[in-house]
Length: 121
Image 1 (cartoon, helix red, strand yellow):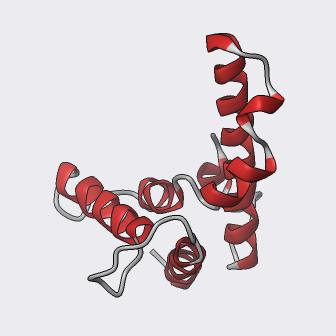
Image 2 (cartoon, rainbow, N blue to C red):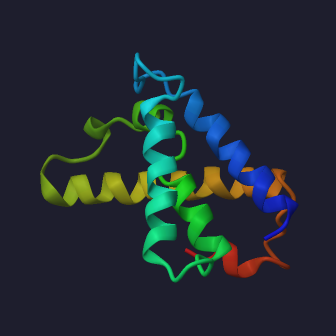
């Protein structure tokens, strides 16, 4: 794993720190940061020691990137009621999360052509 990886993880953590809806009063970490740190640790635990891939770790850390912002940008009531509407809303949010993660990765030096495996969904 290279410098782009470290820079990207740091950027993801920075974004998670801005989530105003999630905070833990007795910690210097927000609930979002804590959740993602635990998720990354869990991925490492489930993988053979040292075998968790760069892509898997990036995916774990970027899960729900800018969740708080995107949920308000695309409110649930902008889609039809019911399960089908909910699934369309979630699918739309998933694409927005992926686009945000892609943007951050590119800003940190990843190239969609040279690092295409990391950009597949």
